[in-house]
Amino acid sequence: MSESYTVAELAAAVGGTVCGEAALRLSGIAEIDHAGPDQLTWAGDAKFTKLIPSSQAGAILVPHDADPTPMPAILCAHVESALVIAMKMLAPSQAMPAIGVHSTAVVDARARLGTDVAVGPLVVIGPGTVIGDHTHLHAGVHLGADCRVGANCVLWDQVVIRERCVLGDRVTLDAHVVIGSDGYGYTFADGAHRRLTHGGNVEIHDDVDMGAGCAIDRAKFRSTVIGRGTKLDNLVHVGHNVQIGAHCLIMAGAVIGGSTTLEDGVVIGGNAGLSDHVTLGRQVQVVGMSTVWSDLAAGMVASGIPARDHREHLRELATLRRGSALLARVKKLTQRVEQLEASADHLDSR
Image (cartoon, rainbow, N blue to C red; front, side, top):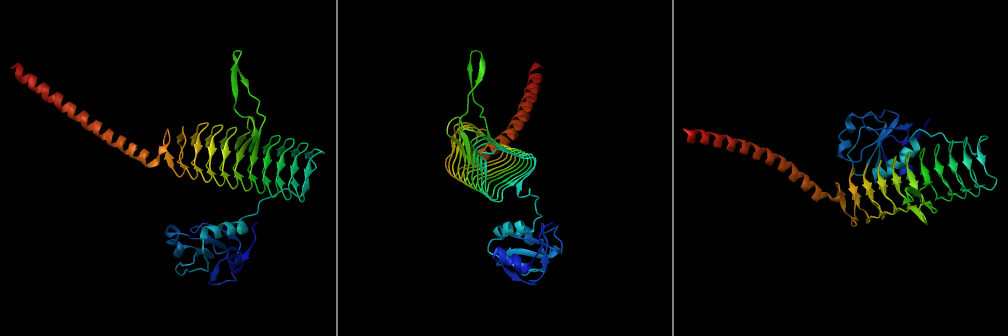
């Protein structure tokens, strides 16, 4: 169950101003065309504003300069920022393991747990590992030896953190994330592929989120690094020795080859592939399904296979479409010429 709050309490939390009945109590949040009388909704742009008259929502988050609404409104400087806070307050609560160590957990005597740490069923914590205050480990989490996990982290079911890996504060890892698996490194010798030992680790900085099933390989030497505030969607693979900067966004299914560098603010679309040893400058954007084979300069928007300037790629596609039409026209003209030549040959033979 979610908590309930008055419109006035929500307005105070998001830094907004109430217009209408401030005492109305709300217990949920939903999209503008699905919200009910006890729920909050939002309208940050014209796409949603046009739906306000027909909405059944109890109250609404709108910009400061919005027109009057039929329901109580919370006037905000930034609707999206206010929505983040409101959702955290009104969304259904998530079940967390109880503070303390579950009876089925295995915690090595040389591990150290901070204040109010929650260790769920069947969790394994190896020797020398340190867990920060207020961190929650859900069922089946496995932490290897000499790991460091910061404060206020949440590791969901079956997360695996291999030996010597480091997590900062407020890191959230969804189910089945694997941190510190061996990188894909082999050398061909004596007629077989021989595995190269990966002796490095993974460093994840503060405020990083990862979706379900992500796999982050440890470095051969030193560290694979994921920078502060970076967010990974489900099923992202990060190869060994990759260096990812701060506040990057990487969508589902993206694959990042070994020793690649993403500078701050890079955005990678879903199912994109990045070759190894390439560098993407600050705030590069790679369109989904693209493949990056070479370095991309800061601020570039890239798409295609291989990825190049997005506008150039669109022009190429337009040219190909025109080329198809041109080929069809040439085919018709060729058939017409052949028909005319056949007619001329027939007349000459007479």
